[in-house]
Amino acid sequence: MASIFTRIIKGEIPSYKIAENENFFAFLDIFPLAEGHVLIVPKQETDKFFDVEDDLLREWLLFAKPIARAIEKAFPCDRCGISVIGLEVPHAHMHLVPINSSGDLNFTKPKLKLSEQELQDVQRKILQNL
Image 1 (cartoon, rainbow, N blue to C red):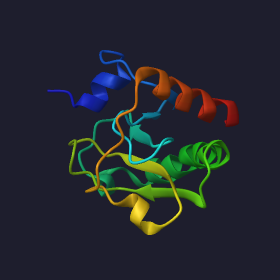
Image 2: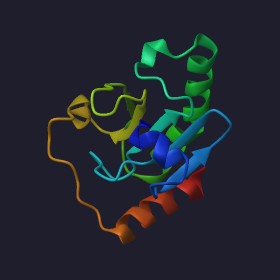
Image 3: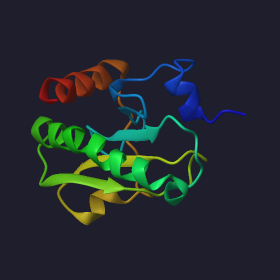
Image 4: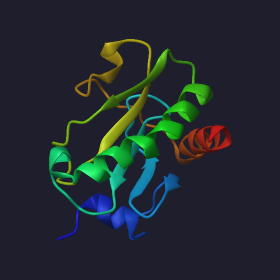
């Protein structure tokens, strides 16, 4: 069975898309740690991050770089943090989160509950800075 991320990539589940190329899909986390929290997933469904092919791992970071810069421009933060946990969905994924301290990447803290309009505003702010 396809992961929820594969279903998002295929358009079976709606998302707030940020960027896409032949190998990757970036979209807003709908239960974010902070406004501007983006998920990046490879289109090829692979469970574990370090099982992704070496060339694809390199390309993944290069794909993420302009998105991270756009997040830093769009939201007040010291930097864009990156996290790879991979326990929530059996499909390798990277979190990009605007942060001011390492505690801002604590995935055990309560997530934000943003409205559809707020998510659209976050998407627009990132896209305007890409």
